[in-house]
Amino acid sequence: MSGIRRVAVIINLEWLLVHHHQVFAGIQRFARENGRWECSVSPHADLLMCGDEPGELPDGIIARATPRLAEMARRAGVPLVNVWLNSRAKNLPTVVHDAEASGRMAARHLLERGFRNFGYMGLADDNFSRLQLAGFRAVLGGAGCGCSENWVARRYARKAENWQQFQTQLGQWIDQWPLPIGVFVAHDLLCRYLAEACALRGMEIPLAVALIGSFNESVVSGHTEPALSSIDFGFERVGHRAAALLDAMMDGRPVGVEPIRIPPADLIARRSSDAFAVSDPVVAQALRFISGHSHEEIDVELVADHVFTTRRTLARSFQKCLGRTVHETITKIRLDRVKQRLLEPNPMIKTIATECGFRDAIQLCKIFQRVEGASPSEYRAERLAGNPHS
Image (cartoon, rainbow, N blue to C red; front, side):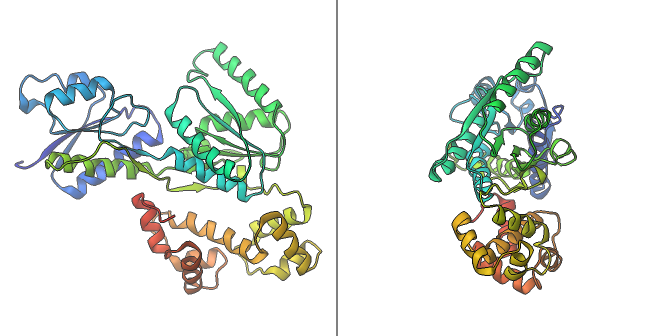
């Protein structure tokens, strides 16, 4: 086993959370590609680092690093890469998901659907939530919009009395909302609780309240009613990038301590944000028609006929409410669906083109290149690598 590097992964896989498991999957993918890594999982850093002989220590560590582990690794001379955004350890090579970028992504999604009232719910004393809100507010502020906030104690469900306080706090926040409103939530489970509280108050989702969660936990977000739109961070890329960084450190190559932030893979749009909050009822009806039929052969004339108005009147209304043409809107909704499909395993451009309303793959590629500035294959490769072109 000469040349084999023993790498310790200190991530608690007993927590059934997508970001723990996907980061680990990314590390394992790098290990298979590298061919000289031998990975072990250890939930207890103290036991891992207590060896008296140099040969008993790992050659490198990837961890949700605490200050104590960082100090132990420094003293032992063992390279360490941190993958925990909320870590309090200082001056460590770090690879984490880009929370601010997810906030910007969610804000753009809601603004494009015409919402002008916004809310954000995050965990108190949580660096991820703070950064996510900063990105959310940055885009909203540029559009002249503000944001109501609700901060939840981390142990909101630990005891019955904590849960009751959480429900009371949630209700008081909801009662202050101007409707319709778009709300971004730091975690899918919190978003599910918020959806249930809205339903109890008779608020229709997504027409009165559009919701976006975070982490794309499929059981919580994708298999419930209404299905929740959610930010898919693509955490496997975090693990893979962290492993590549650790490999460089073990080679003796210099690396920086400025955190490497991996942008989200995509916003997975589902029923909870599938609404258009525009003041003009004709435009709202047209948008719902386009959203439901964008995979078919529709054009501006057909949309105008469906909402019983003229093409010219509809064009003026779209420019006034959305700042773009009906044709541009049809194209945008189609391309949004194309981008979602491109991140699925083994996508076939020909199939995606016909299922998303394009004549063929040639037309799709031509329009995609013009609008996105990259080909569909380039877009997919850049997103999966964590380096989106836009």
